[in-house]
Structure formats: C-alpha cells, structure tokens
Length: 155
Length: 160
Image 1: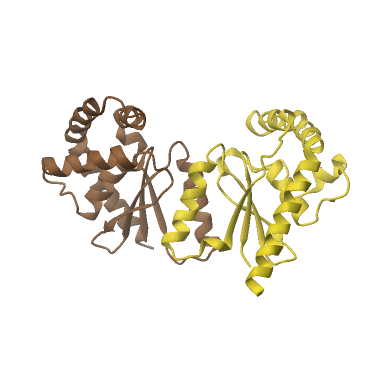
Image 2: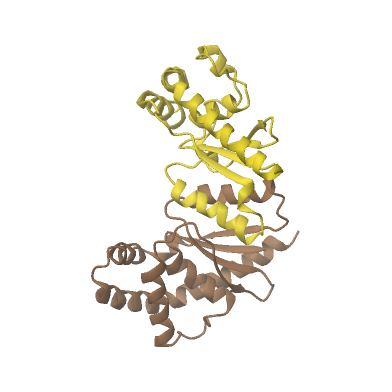
C-alpha cells in the first residue's frame, strides 16, 4: 500500500508526518537542531513543488510512505489518483491523508515568503518555533493514522 | 494503445465536446444543433463533488481510450500528481496524453457552466453553455484534428 500524506505544500506538515510515520523522526523526542535545519532547507528549496510524490520510506508494515503538496486540490487529486490506479490496473491501494487542517497558518505564510525569497532568517526562526510547537501534536496524529490504517487494511 | 485525457475546469462541457468530436459522436464538418449536444453522454452532468474522477467516453480508431477529466484550475498540480503516481508505479509516460480543452472558450460557456453546475440552475445554464460551445466549435474541431494527427504520427513512429 502507498500511504500519501498531502499538505498544501509537501515539505511542511506532510513531510513531517511522513517522516514520523516512516521512523526517520522519533515521535518520543524532538530531532536534533541539524535535522530541523535540514528540514527547513528542504522547505526553502523544494516547497514550491506541487503534485510530486516525495518518497520518504517504508513503515513497519512495509507500506510505502510519501509526502505530496496538493495546493488547494486535495480532493481532486485524491479522486484522480484513485481512479488512475483502477484505469491502469495498478495492483496497489492508495491511502491519502489530508494534513492541511493540522498544519495551521504558519506553513502557508512561511512558504509564501520563502517562494519570494524574502525574510529567510525570520522564516527559519518561525519554522523552528512551528516545528517544536507542533511536533508532539503531529506525533500523536501519526499514531492515530497508523491505527486507522490497520483498520483500513482489515477486511 | 494508451490513454488520452481531455481536461478542462469542470469536466462537463468543453472536454466532453472534444472527446465526442474525437470519437465522431459529433460532426467535424458542421456545427451541431442544440439537440445533438443534449444527446451526448455526460454533457453538463459532472457534479462538483466528482471533480477529479475521469469519465470513460470510448475508444478511438487507433485504439486510444478517451477520458474526460475536470480538475478546476489545478492542472499544474493535478497532472504532475497523476504522472508522478504512474512514475512510481512503473508505468511508461508515453502511454498517457493530457490535452487541455480550454481553448478559445467563450465566456458564455464558463458563465453557463457556473449557472448550471455550481448554482444548480441547468435550465438556464445548459442553453448558455451550448450557445458558447457552438461559437467556439470550429476551434475545438481544430484542436481535436491536431491531436488526432499527433496520435497518428506517434502510431507510425512506433510501427517503424
């Protein structure tokens, strides 16, 4: 199964949840400063890539975990991808998770500024604050999603 | 052969018309009458809730499966999302073609589509869409002819 975390942009909440799900980030403790800096660099460089599936890793159940930026089109993309798997007879289920309501306003604001390459230092500070503030919340959300996923897989 | 998607904003008017021209449900040499538009499958039928769901329209003479797809104004996001999924699933990109049916769209078509699909007043909106589509019909035929020509060239390339 492919589990796709979808946010407005791929690199903020979507990637964070995907990394937690795949075990790159441990839910019990905040990643080191270098990890957060690297995550910010990813947001700065690739934040504007919409529609690309970013492979993050495998989880314990060998599901492939992806992050994707859907802009405002989550529902359209969810349906399109689900139908395309049927049309092309792709023998793998898709499980989309909309992260946008969990992310809050800040990723949109930071993404807007970073896309215009202004106030990068301010964005970095905001990003650190947002990351630390939301980390526990996202870790819990991932645990919830994993339980949902188990239910989804049971016939 | 492959799959061709005609896409537009709502997947209800221009893309359906292009698919029908492609499949010869509508004529190439004249502008169809209103009743002919009303008779074609899925014309002015796509609900907002189903945007993103491709509709199968038929198979053309070259063996391409023709679909219509409504993707709001998100073609810059939705098309990469579909191609990206095909890519990670190991399906070659040359089997899939996306054609935007939003060429020379008459404003009346857009207004009629909004009235019919969004406001839910089809008895006002549908005639407006048909009037607008009839105005831009030669452009749509021209688009489909160019698409078919490109598909034929691709077909010959594969054979040689």
